[in-house]
Length: 336
Image (cartoon, rainbow, N blue to C red; front, side, top):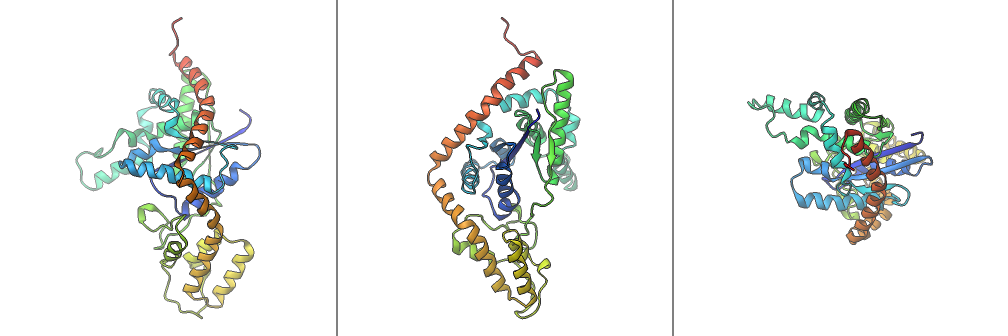
């Protein structure tokens, strides 16, 4: 395969926030518009049920995540946009890979090791307490997500590199044991992608409860921004923008000229309330139109469903014939 095929999955366990937008949604959409790249983007709802056992949350999140990407400019005609659970070939390939993958490889998975370490630290006699087979073997499902479409490049954060390496290992073992069918994917880490700080000074994360919702109404958005923790410097005192969460987030939305102007205002002693207001205005200016599109989309879930079904049909044009090749390679064939 000589061309570039990029694949990205989004877990359906929460409502997208500002950090998701800056760190994943915006750069992925920009990349999907680049010439010469074939993009696959999917809603990872099977991954979602590993840790989230609230059916309504999975359902709401699927709608919100799909609507977010579409509202932010994702073109389903240009890329392949689908829901993982609409591709039955993926769980079938997962089982085939389960029969190829060494258990020892899964023992080394970061999430599994973290769960075992937590049990040991708590003095639990069973190191596997609370560990489902979904949690233990989800890197195999992730490998199937990637290799089902022979994706060449997988954009990930540094903490996700191991999953791509495991997919490479599984692909290599299959190719060696059966037939050379799988491309070995490469992890792509974008060092320039912004990682935003949350309201309390820690990394913006749903688990910390410190996020700024992406498509809140204007009043609610402003109220959240006003909660950003600052130091006790008074208006008129020069401030260091590089130590300010407000400026860090502002920088993710502003051009170079706007950043330079804001730096000058920090040096001149801008008050924290004024800085937060400037941040609100900048974010609101970028998100007002997508917010309106998001409202329209979530009010019409059948439209989103149609888009996802069209994407699934497109994805299965790749998956169905390729799985037939894979089944043949392992000996699952018609008898006559």
